Image (cartoon, rainbow, N blue to C red; front, side, top):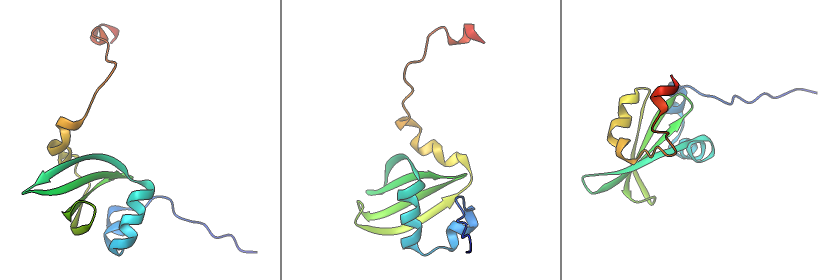
Length: 97
């Protein structure tokens, strides 16, 4: 009897080597939705996947993909920062440190 081990995490480089369909399957299975922006009238969806980020640029929203952009640089979040909602912050938080 052989034990087949599956690799749960993949690197940015390994993700980039996958076919687009496999990339999308992995994003929908393990990716965390970060936000959506419009660039020149086309939707762009940002996901965090493991330790990197994946932007999916669509021709039409969730219909046809123009391209997929990946990066390990968290600066990509700047374009999406206005969508981040921070709730339940105590005004006296600074006093607790």
